[in-house]
Amino acid sequence: VDEDAPPTIRQRVVAKGSNVPPHAETFEALVERYQMSSLLLSNLTANGYKHPTGIQSHGIPILLESRDLAAISPTGTGKTLSYLLPLLCSLGAPSASGKSEAGAGVRAVIVAPTRELAHQINNECMKLAQGRKWRIILFSKATANTMTDKAARDKVDIIISTPLRLVASLKSGSLELDNVRHLILDEADRMLDAEFFPQVEEILAACTHPKIQKAVFSATLPANAEKMAMQMLKDPIRVVIGLKDT
Ligand code: ADP
Ligand code: MG
Image 1 (cartoon, rainbow, N blue to C red):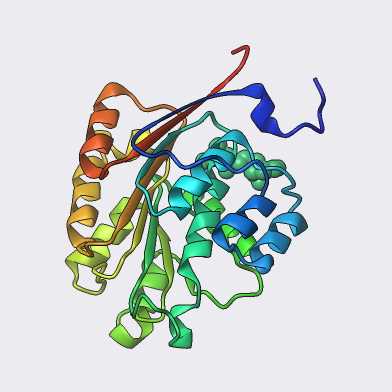
Image 2: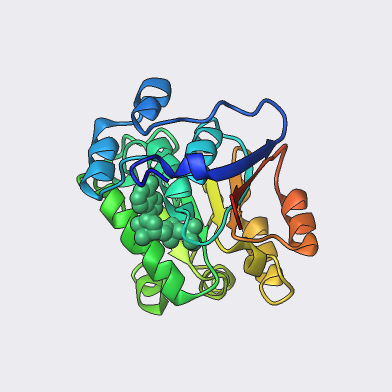
């Protein structure tokens, strides 16, 4: 096996849904095809990301074409970047700049089952967002308290949170999600299980914008979670990456 070869070669890919956009062989292709900024491309390079993994090469174009996505790909295959890159690409100008076309208020929410995972996602997001003043909030009791006035909330671009934390702020009336255009559930097998689903439902109910894009990412999606995913997603594309020889 050629270790320098892009990881896609060693993976088996099944993509199902209407009008599946072609995958991107390289990160550079995203600049040509979707006008991804050179800043994002250089942040990828700076972080040592040379070739997209299978889920990145297939998932990123789908999200950049504003489609809903259920992505199933094994642990360690780079699912985080698969949703962070298109998210940062789609956000454009930071909300606080006043140039955001999508208006004021939180525009993206990433939900993960544990604080630890939310923390890792936040780190990855900050690396990728270097050089742009997007307001990215790792949601906690402390950060939620800095957002109690609406003017502060209106400047937030991305919230990364556990479901419990978000629901607590929604219940206290100190958070609105009505301008959220991108909702991502990471480790979706857990987000859609009996423990978390009631909270996810409350989050979904608060995300009232008609143009919202939703995506779920997981290493596995048991039948019941899959059923929930298909109910919450609109005309989704389902991508399954399987490692060969496993
Ligand atoms: P998953 O969520 O699928 O388990 P992660 O998103 O946590 O995987 O990524 C696993 C590791 O792979 C991380 O250390 C990440 O920085 C690295 N990684 C992700 N994408 C690439 C890439 N295209 N090239 C090299 N390393 C990558
Ligand atoms: Mg992950």
